[in-house]
Amino acid sequence: MHSTLYGLDAGLHRRLVDSLYIEAMVMADEARAYFDKAGAEDREALEPLDRIMFSCESLKVTTRLMHVIAWLLAQRAWQRGEIDSEVLADKRFRLGEASASEADAICHFPFAARSLIDGSADLYERVARFEARILAGRTRASGDEFGPAQALIDRLAQSL
Image (cartoon, rainbow, N blue to C red; front, top):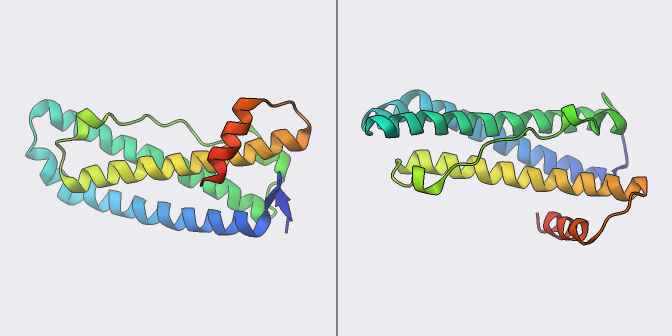
């Protein structure tokens, strides 16, 4: 077992990854259940343009969650020694980009939809901060110069 990942204690890393993974899987299951059943009924009650927006938002939720889950699975592979830190640093193992939702576009959606949209965005942002913390540690470990912007990223990551 690795002792650190760019300055982050392996035990803390494992607990964070495990906690976020459980949260992501539960949310993915809730999103699937909602958008396949109750969400379909909620969608039909909307105006035609809003139905399109609703469908787009369900795809955004799914995309956010799949990016998060993929990133967390890569972290778990590192924990198990299946990939090393150098491989994990490759861009293909970074958190994928996900489109943000516009508050004014979803404000009249049903509560359950808004909760899933907001929850997936919050989870994605927390994982992005976690990743930023790891990347900041890698930058320091490699001896690269970093300035005030990196210090701000570090402070934000610590608030996670």
